[in-house]
Every structure is written in structure tokens, then in C-alpha cells.
Image (cartoon, rainbow, N blue to C red; front, side):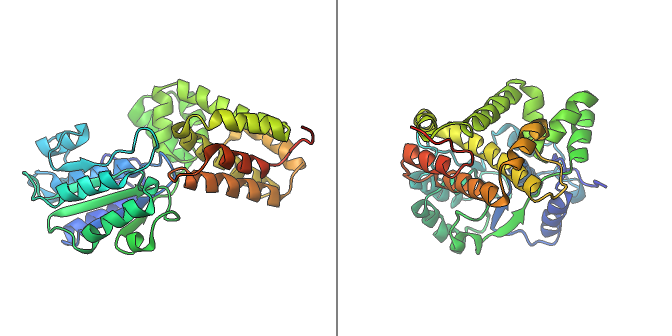
Amino acid sequence: MTTHHWPVYGHDWAIEHLRKGIANGRTRHAYLIVGTESIGKETLARAFAMALNCTHADEAARPCGVCSACKRITSGNHPDMLYSELDSSTGALKIEEVRAITSRIALKPYEARYRIAIFRDFDHARPQAQDALLKTLEEPPPQAVLILLAPSTESLLPTITSRSQVIQLRPLPADSVRDALIQHRGASPEQADLLARLSGGRMGWAIRALEDPSILEQRAQALDLLEQILTLTRAQRFEIADDLSKDKLALYPLLELWQSYWRDLLLLNQQAGIPPANGDRLAGLEQLAHHTVPDDAVRALKATRTLAQNLSTNVNLRLALEVMFLDYPGLVTGN
């Protein structure tokens, strides 16, 4: 049962862990929050920042959500909050951006207890950019807290993870997503049921899909495209690779969704008895499962994950997409 005041749905164990650290005076200088896209990493990071800098007299009531500090952190206008931005053309977290934030985090807070930097999508930082953060992690300013966000630790340097408190967020139960949508977001039971099933336990995605119906349409189009690719020849797949390579930033959510599809297929192939995240695609998944073996799903999942991890590098996108499509099952022979 939730007993905190944090503006976060679920992840109560993580909140309790962070609250105990604050209460015992053991706040770390660096945290690494990992979890799949839209699972609530930045929401938790902001709530943690609010708890650290809330001005409510009762520590147990922090974050109160109504003091000036809480309100400005919520709106993104607090002078002691720093946020990294990805390069608009490449989607990478560039070394210049990391250096700019580390130079600012070294300054004393303007008014709060802590200056806090949230590095969004830190997995998009190349090794040189990650290296640029190491000195700050090794010798952190006394009133600075760095919060790194990433889907996993796989693409991060070991020196980064070893100097950070790692908090692994896991998907929420479908019932938790459903109840939150109804109780806090005004969703109808029918809407909440559908979005909870399709969310894969990602509260952020469910909220966005409730507010913007086009998200469900885009999701359907992306899965239609994947299922179409599985019926095509090599040459036809390469044509789609050429088309997809022209919009690098659009590939991040696309590949995340496709990974969930391949995980569903693997579970079906292994007869795991776990309901698929993409339950509305069950008929197509079951048909595909009849013509594939677990190794096929594993190969496709690994290929998709590899490309997703390489997006922030100088990879040749068209070639990388072609390689990925060659590892997808159902390749039709022909030109």
C-alpha cells in the first residue's frame, strides 16, 4: 500500500529506498535509473529532486507538491535543476553537452539544498561523452546530485555504473496501470483495460496514449510494417531499410516496440503461458509461432536490440537496418 507523497505511480520499493536515504542523511552524489522506455524513469527522477529540495517544514511530507521549489521543479523552471538535451540531428548526447552541464553543476546552488542534473537518455552518450562525466563522478561537488537515465546498463561504461547507485525499474502489473488510469486520469474502464494490456507495464506510455489517440495509431502502423516485412524478399526489405534510414530519431521508439513483439514471439515459441504485451496481435503472433522456432525469435530480438544500442554511434543506418532485416524470419527467396 502506498504511504508516500511522491507524484509517481508504482515503483514503491524504489521510492522507499530513496526516502530512507534522505531520512538517514545518505543521499548519494550519483544515481543511475534504468528501465525500458516510458516506464517512469524521469518521473521518478523529478520526484526525487522535489523530495531533496522541498521546503515543507515536515520532512515526512516531502515532496509536498505545493511549495515554490516543488512547483518549479514540476514545471521545469527551477534554477538549480539542469537537464541534458540530445543533439537534434543525430539523437546523440554529445560531449559538449555533458561538459556544459558538469561545469554548471560545479557551482553552488542558487537557493536549493542541491543542484541536480538529470541526464536523459544517457545511453545515447558515446564513450567519449561518458568519459567527460567521470571526473565529476569521482570528485562530485558537495551539493550536487547527478541522475542518469538509461534503458539498461549494457551500453554504459563500467566506470559509470560502478560510481552510481543503480535503481532498476521494472514494468508495473497491468492492474496497477489500469487502476491508476481510472483513478487519477479519468479513463473509462474500457480505455484503461486496453491501454494497460498494451502498455507492457509502462505507465508513461499508457498516460500518453490516453491523452493522444494518435499514439495507438502510430503503434498499429509500426506493427503492421513489421508484419509486412516478414513477408517480403531481401530486395523489398532493403527498400524499406533505405526509407527508414532517413529518420534516425523515429527509429528509437520503433525498435523498442519491435523488441516487445519479438519477446512475445519467443514466449509463445517456448509456451511460457505469459500473456503477450502486444495482445491485440495475438493471432498474427500465433501464426508466426507455427512457422518459427525459439532460435528465430532470439535472433530477431538480438538483431533489433543491437541496432537500438548502436543508434547513438556513427553507424551506417541503411546498412545496419539491412543486416537486421536479414536476421528476421520469413525471408522470401527472390530478387
